[in-house]
Image 1 (tube, helix red, strand yellow):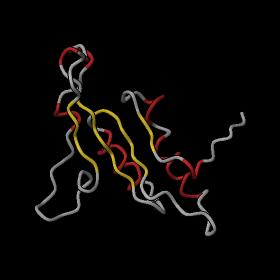
Image 2 (image 1 turned 180 degrees about the vertical axis):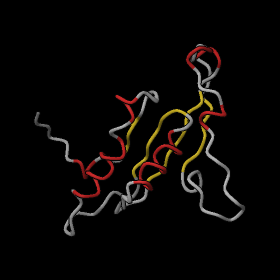
Image 3 (image 1 turned 90 degrees about the vertical axis):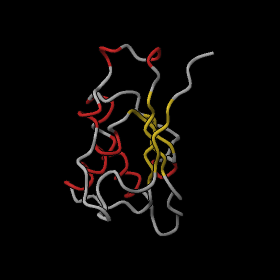
Length: 123
């Protein structure tokens, strides 16, 4: 498959849900963006990743376990749907998506850029 899009040009990524076919390629995609950044090309100022709660923890653990080093910063913005946007049987409990707590002052997997966003109900 060919595309006009270059990996080094990616600045935003949206993950719709935490199924493997939507999620597991993300660490590799970010590494590809990093590898395709050369000295003549300015790396992205920040790649913003949007997705469900738990995404930040997954990404930081996956990148950490694989020893991946990115040449640019990234921020994970976790989106939390309202009750009417997500049926109860499709929601993950906070226990599943919460990162283990780190000692005060430690740089744990949930520290760093990004935020939790509560989605507004539809009008």
